[in-house]
Image (cartoon, rainbow, N blue to C red):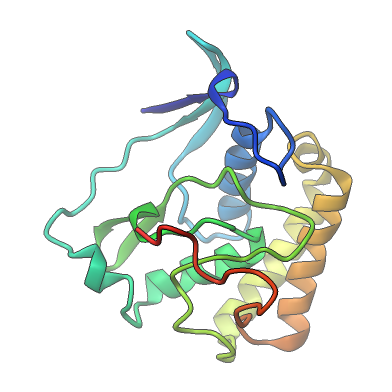
Length: 194
């Protein structure tokens, strides 16, 4: 298990203090609501250092070379890229990819997600501007409905403006029917990328 207590969170200039654990849990909920299956089981629990995020430890396939793997046109990585676009992940680094096998990948460190401003930063840009598949559009339609139905629970974890931005991102993906492209107003890749 991984335990990240709120008391140990480092203040960030662009995210609310003491809220990263809730964002990690919200990311897990979105992964489940949209049937992405890319975030390990995650809960909020009271632990030895207070309330925090608790996440299942993932044993990765250490034979997979992450420096090569993240560049591949892999359906699991593509699913992760779509998930990151939905949650507005500002920190998808190579080391945040957890390949159990080449056909089963989880991701970790989702504390800096759901910002109301577009801040997508990722190493998974190989699908930028590519059309969404029928399956991806169906996934987003299901997710949109589920996010609306789960509004009470999500609004306990993220702000109203972040919740509205989440729905707006899903809607934009459905309207444009393609993956987002890197912004020229914000660094497209987190530093360091690994």
